Length: 423
Ligand code: SF4
Image 1 (spheres, rainbow, N blue to C red):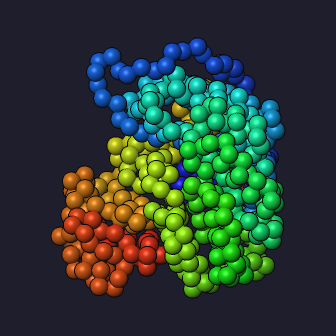
Image 2 (tube, rainbow, N blue to C red):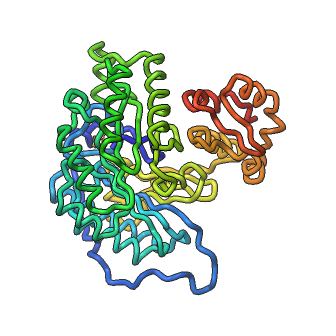
Image 3 (cartoon, helix red, strand yellow):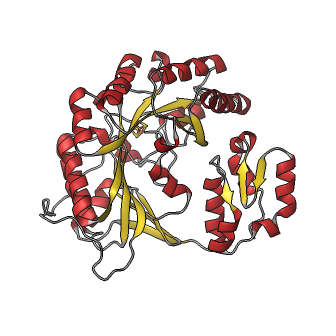
């Protein structure tokens, strides 16, 4: 998938090329019997949280992808699943109550439905999960069939996020995707018929040479399929990816910043006018109920636990992340320890910066009073003139305690945040 997430990590070259060896030399157990994890007996409160499960496998590696991904055969995937189950067990003492379970990747839809069901069952029996937990699954169109969507519905998937990326042959070929426009469209139709709460389409724009008319045509084709949610990501070229190498050699040229800006504005203008309400820089939903409950946790600093290679976690001002290399991740779990590579404690300044970074990427913006209460940073006092100037330039609006980016502000969200004095 193409997503900008906290878990996204630059891929390890050896992994991406499928050269990574698995060094499992220890049996780590099968699926233990267990009753549904109940609420604490001592009456203590559980904290609502999100659970992210990173499945690193893909049928092949897309030339723009910088996630922790690898190709792998059936046996390797089975081994991975056993380790993921064991990693869930290592968190059985978690005080968090998960109301979202998000299968991301990689391509989690390439796992057998029975394996996905085992993982959901293990999470539900070993961890605290809420009664209305939502389950999200990222899927590639080539994995969508009447049988697979029925199986995913059966295991409780509410939101299916389809990695469509483009709806024209040239775009899909350029992006190195395995599906064609026809199978992409069929995957949306099949998914809608299967009755998921939300069917979401991922699209990529800003391909070299793409005109505004091309992109609007693409958006219209997507809208005609009547998805509940659309995610539109601007193509970013990362060093170390195949596109990165091509750019360095001069065989690939990105769109100019002006052309990219034009497509950004077109995306927001056209989708909002067509009934898909934007709520984040790249997220659009047909109604509020189709907005991503899971992503919201990243945006408002709710706790989340990430399991699987490269997955990030956050709770109470601390962030930690797993080893990105799948073999190292597996070795740690086989040794009975959590596969955490590093942990950092964020101070008030860092937390404020993050809240601004994520908040300014949303239409809602940031709640300055909440930032003051949570981390003691009174930006209304320290940045009063600056806020007035940004409002005068049409980049933000101020409503009470809330500071929200305009569409022009959204387009430059990162530099907008960096312009604040957070000292
Ligand atoms: S399908 Fe392509 S873009 Fe998505 S995670 Fe796999 S390699 Fe990356």
